[in-house]
Image 1 (spheres, rainbow, N blue to C red):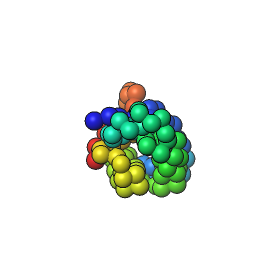
Image 2 (cartoon, helix red, strand yellow):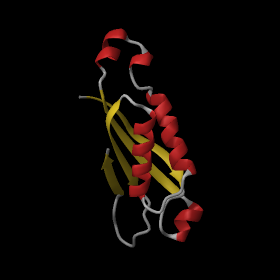
Image 3 (tube, rainbow, N blue to C red):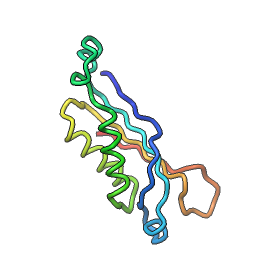
Image 4 (cartoon, rainbow, N blue to C red):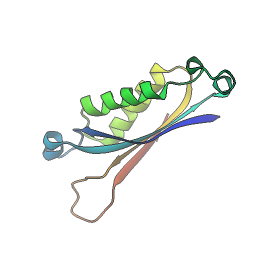
Length: 117
C-alpha cells in the first residue's frame, strides 16, 4: 500500500463540550494518512492518476471550520467518512486530531485522537 500524508494542518473551529469552547472556539491540528495505490501516478506524472491533496485540504478545512462537534472523536470520524466517500480510490484513511488548548486544570501539551477507516 502507498500513502499520502497531510501533516499538521491547522484550523480554527468550535468543537467541545464546554460552553466556552462552543463560543470562543479553538485551534485544531489535523493529520491525514491516505492509503491508496500510487503506482500509476508514479509512472504517468498526471494529477488525474492520484489523489488531489489540495482538494482534500480544502474539504477538511470546510469540515473543521463549519461543522460543530462535542467530541474530537466525532470530528475525526466525520472527516474520515466524508473523505473516503468522496474519493473512491482511497483504500484506507487515518485521521489524527490534536486539540492543544483543552480546558483541563493541569499541565498537558495536547489531547489527540486517531481514527482509521
